[in-house]
Amino acid sequence: LAGALQSSFRLLQWAMVAILVYIVLTGVYVVEKHEVAIVLRLGKVVGTKADRVRQPGLHFGFPYPLDEVIRVPVKNFQTVKSETHWYQLNDAEKEAVARKEDPGPGPPTLRPLVDGYTVTGDTNILHSQWQLTYQIVDPVRYALDFAQNGKEKAVEELLRAALDNAVVIVAARY
Image (cartoon, rainbow, N blue to C red; front, side, top):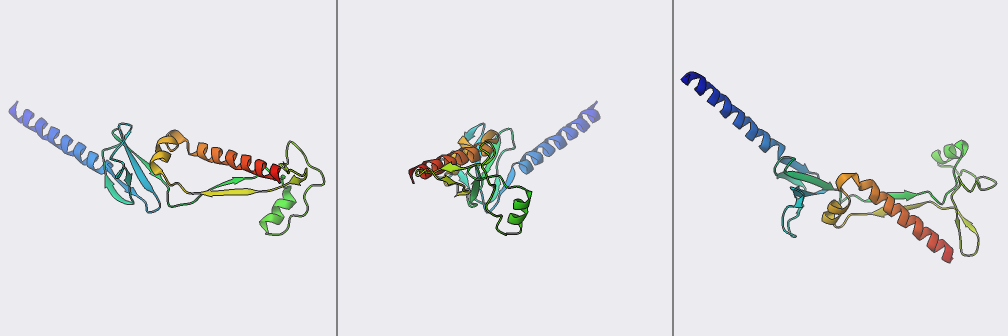
């Protein structure tokens, strides 16, 4: 009986060491040079206002159920494109654009449900493509408001809608 207890105690010690090694190894995370990280412990941001944001490098924390690491790409510029105000190209026009050639004057008539356009203030028709470039400057707010639960696409849709709205307002004034 003493030998069985001693061997089960050793097995229990090995299991505890294995769990400790697992906790240490899964708590290590790397923040890349183009991003910062926000750590949520049990759903709340870890740290004071001055040290909430983890800079690039090697960091330690608790494993996933306790700590959640949200990476925010702050150094990269993000791009949102809007082609709502542009007419749809046919295959020949797409090939010309791919070869960096002039696709031509476009279709002879507009197809209102297919072709995008904007009516200007002097009642002309404007076809345009727009691109918005932005950079995340408040990673904590971005992480708490948008980066959780797959809402990154919601940011793009919100910015695309704001860009389309701005194009319509500016075109209507001129």
